Image 1 (cartoon, rainbow, N blue to C red):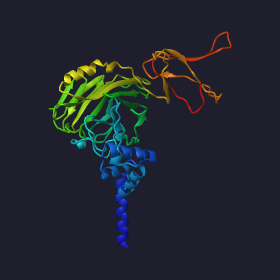
Image 2: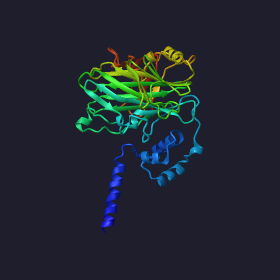
Image 3: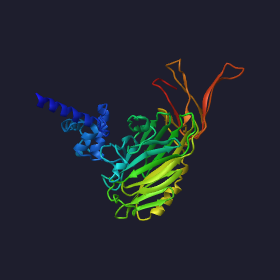
Image 4: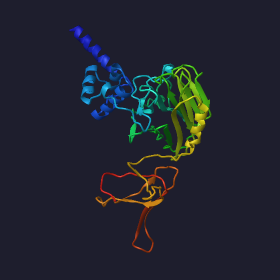
Length: 397
């Protein structure tokens, strides 16, 4: 009788320990489980033990699900030819080699894997944001080892996930308990990854000293695992790492810059930006760049990147479910236009007004009775750039 009780108690303790593992993220649906299993087997090449830790499945359950979904090394698809492969990092496997006590329980909702174009298995882990400081103190941290303003109050932030933006992009946004929202979008192109961060001040007081720590971890990039800074290059906004053979580079940059540096023990690269001071109700933005380079002229490559004008590129902040551009039918040239969307199947909510995808653009909405007439003026004046509008299910014109 006592032996049975001891066994039951031991089982309960073991189950409790497993449940407390912050790296375990059971999927709420078969669709999400299939995505993560494809991610881990096909691309990150996780071991069975690593997959079981992340999913919470037993080895037997895992094999059943892999068979049901048709996921194996033999069914791995080719990489896209028109863009770099960019995927959410699954967690579980620690993305650092060293300084592990400085990143306990890393959170996967800030981490994306950018897969190297020169082999079929290497990747760098982009941690955006790793940390956010403000005049309030350490306002967010994507792992644990020191207190944030929330952990000091006993507040635990909820787990989140990346949201797909079509086939080539990802977005993550977190709302903090005081109303601050911080978000990141990453869009994969053929030769680089376009990055943007935003911070919305939802408090009733101005925010300042808004320093961000953005990290690129190199543990899983073959040839980049030297735990020293002899292979690192810092040039203005740019932080770059050279492979052991000297022929390949990993490059990152953010603007406006606070500090660019490298952390040898991890090893990792940092181009750490700073948001401008942010008044209550205001939103501020940062632009970022990430790319790979094969060659022996890194300074020439950095000059080429700088010449792309990425620091001045138009911002694109999607917050609605429908986007579009008004174009000339013959030339395809974007046009300034007046636009509204009318719903045909709900007279209680008949009109919807678009805004620009560029948060720095001005849109002027009209929804008024024209003086002295029975006419109603309804439209939004848009500049010649993409727009967005939030539409519930329905029929529109």
